[in-house]
Length: 243
Image (cartoon, rainbow, N blue to C red; front, side, top):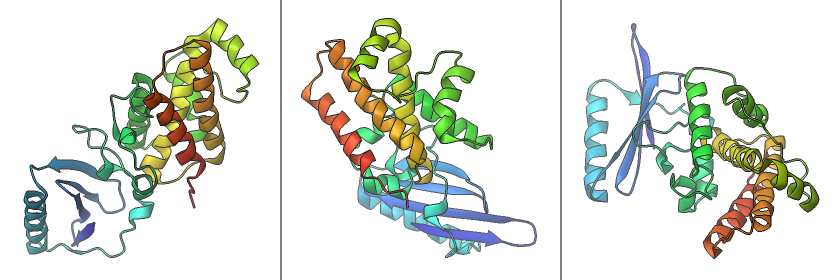
């Protein structure tokens, strides 16, 4: 990752580029802002690296200087709106800790952002951040479901088999949606900021576990892959250190 800054009497802006294998991300905008993100992929790593060098040379010729003060760990990371989920538009801590491909899969129903509810959660958080709205992540699942969607939120505070059985019998739709949204919110906070609210961490772990209890009660024919995904998310989330 290389960051540059251009500053004169009229403007102060940053531009940074990072590449991995056959893709690069460009992040640019007013210094101090989140800026815009753009992902570009190539047929080969060599072609990608060559294009990166051209772009860097072009910026240097225009007067951009190395921006050593840029702190990648304190930056906000948002996906390219056209390309969606991508490692390069995720916080470095997220990439380092959550390494499995399903964390960046928008089609895996068991993944944090693969279901409709998970994808919509990440999308709404991203939209709110772009609009400079203050987000309280631990409260966001309830805000999203009740205030944005006009539905019922069921917090994952009691995940006993008895309580989950009762909820499955009387309110399974809201139960499953609440758990997906809670899970997605936790992973979204890490993906975007590299941080995780302690209360939200507990709720997200409970949500994943309660979803597995509900699946067993509903006698879903889950595969070994789906069970492994849930176990991996629990393990990764439990061992994530936001410090």
